[in-house]
Amino acid sequence: MFFDLIRHNGLFAALTVIGLIQPFFLPLGASLLSGEAIAAEASAGTLRYLVVRPVGRARLIVAKYSAVVAELAAAIVWVMVVALIAGGFAFGYGSLPTLSGTTLGGGAATVRIVATAGYALVGMGALAAIGMFLSTVTDSGLGAAAATMAIAITSQILDGLPSLRAIHPYLITHRWFAFVDLFRSPVEWNGIVQGLILSGAYVAVFLGLALAVFSRKDVVS
Amino acid sequence: MNVIEASGLTKRYRDLAAVDELDLSLEAGVLYGFLGPNGAGKTTTIRMILGLVFPTSGRVDVLGQPMFGPGGAERALRRVGALIEEPAAWSYLSGRRNLEYFARSGGPAEDRNRRLARIDDVLRIVGLEHAANKKVKAYSQGMRQRLGIAVALLGSPDLLVLDEPTNGLDPQGMREVRLLLRRLADEGTTVFVSSHLLAEVEAMCDRVGVLASGRLVAEGPPSRLRPTADRLRIEVDDPDRARAVLADVDGATLDGSETPGERVLRVELAPPATAALVNAALVTGGVQVSALVPEQESLEDVFVSLVEGADVPR
Image (tube, rainbow over all chains, first blue to last red; front, top):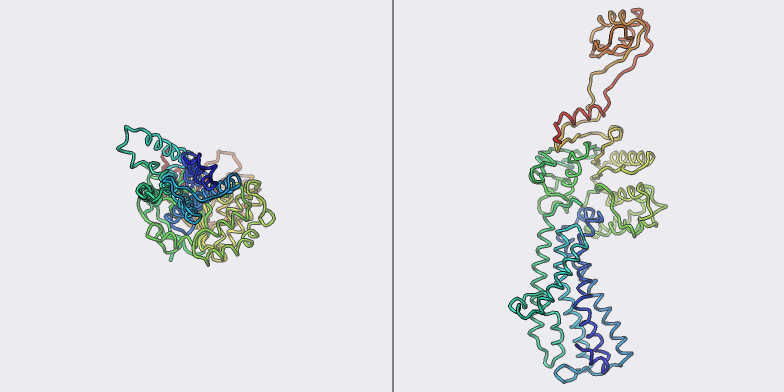
């Protein structure tokens, strides 16, 4: 989406790379990390030892989820930093033109690039919540990860079918690319706010389900 | 206050009761052996005691805390160490790193620091100090077992729950674990240990509970599990004369299983008869005794009869 702009300004490399990894690679990371979070401990036999630690089961879930989100944040930051450095070397930095034709100064541009990273993380956090829930209902980490990835892909496919427009606003991936609206002048908040609400709802529902399932689950692995 | 107090503890999987109305009390400082054949419900019981498996009905209190009441498990587990079936470790980390990970996980900061400070101690106690920095994937099964016991000991627990702790150990290792558990119990730690090795349990435990099809079929000190009546096997030169002599010994009963002419007699002893009195009577009566062997039913026989008596559904 920003491809043609990269050669004008290396800052765009960071945004382009988010656009590139958002549909597949980031969801893959989110699925693997979250799907394995509980289930892989179960199949490795370490889950029973974690549960007999003197911490509540809810805390275990929250800690695991926090770790997954932290790892995803590290992945996003790493990819963007590398892209910024590479983009700067190749094309240099300049003021950032917006999609509306105005330009942003260095400070404003930085804020919006950081906001882009944060927004991508929120979207991945929602997917990771689904993965956490699936990870509590099976002892197969890869199974949970594959199911989570399948949800991300299916959601994107359904989002591309015009005849299903009625369900589009509820699909987890529907607002993943709303971060481009950060680069309009003025910022187009509608899609971004809807994206944050949607992700928040997914996190609340699926992390809640994960907590509910796991706090009553017999640990027999 | 009992360290473990279970009442009516029941776990059903569909129609099958894995643990059936189990009552159990464990006093502080006792080394308790939990015996039973495979599938008797030992592991399910241990998992309920540790709060891993939720009972269908009944309750269990550990160190005075209800395991399935609000916050009870967390308070109790601060003072419990456990080895559940096989030890588990992150095999790509060294033994020491595994212990550090467990030491850092859970509980208030003072607990975590105390556990971290004990890592060298527990490594020494289980005899792993030389292999502490090796990756666990290079450990033998016996070393993994020791590491599992080390993890259980990290928090200086008041209650130690060990499921088959001598599995995979060589005879020397088994003996070391037995001595270690005995020492911990003598120092005041309550130890709850499951096993299917009868001799092992008999050698080290203060109390034994026998579980069969989810029910406790016998409980008491190991010596009490054996029948009290003594039996003697006597080899004599003249069985007919021996029978005549024994008929006059108060409390000695011939079981009558011997065939005519056989020179081996079996005698049941009841007070006041003793082996020494029987021997003296025979010798005085002119019978030459070439062997006099006390016969005790082995714990294995007792165990098998208890378990079969429990009517195990197949």
